Length: 316
Image 1 (cartoon, rainbow, N blue to C red):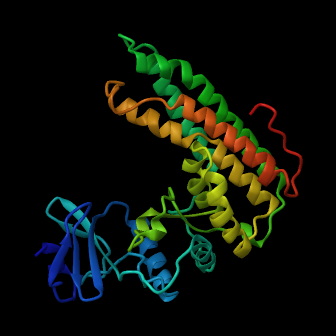
Image 2 (tube, rainbow, N blue to C red; image 1 turned 90 degrees about the horizontal axis):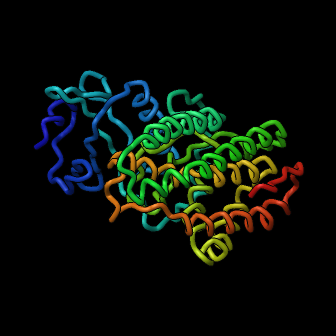
Image 3 (cartoon, rainbow, N blue to C red; image 1 turned 90 degrees about the vertical axis):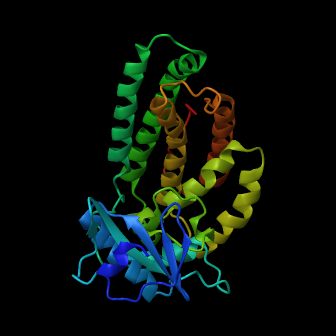
């Protein structure tokens, strides 16, 4: 038995069903998740958000429980934990992204600690500043192996694309053209088909514009030859039938796809390993060229056909 259950007014679950990535216990249809706890204000929002989703019958969204002292964080020794609760999703019900966003848009309170809506520009500038500092550091690194040389040559181009994405975002925000579908909802920090999982970890959610999830669904498919077009015909059209995108939404979607967060992710792995894991990491320069071509095609076919304010991308 995990000692955390001593601090909650409940019977100890009868069995443990998993240990990694965190302990999971089960009692009938009820599941309990033991997660490390850090920011109390964020966890308070998680508690309210999770209860909100349960009220709307999304019972597989995990949320932190109050312990016997009406606290969400439980100290055990030198560590702090939270005990989260959920039930498995109903196999007889279809959970799609549009439905998830519709429910999230009904949230009646202002999200503060888990809010990213309207903050993309600030966060992207911070990301660029961090990577420019690392670039200057590794420019002085010796010896220079092949992977580091590729990075040194490739980084200025990626930096230019990132700056163009910020420029495009700035123009998009100034143009406006909002509709009711542009209001904040709950999205995933980085959508990776979490709706197909048995549970949704509330700690992965942020308040943001719904195109955040659409962009992250599309991003890996832009590296492939034909997957985007096939997938968009099913996923994209189904979503837009339920939640049409405004002119602002289409352009916001493109700006997020343009910002090379996936390349920055690779850079960060290389920083962590000092550019030594050459057998496990490489710079997908050829794949990125395909990504840009597919993105340009998507821009010219899906976005330019919408009502837009004539934002041009001659540099792509």
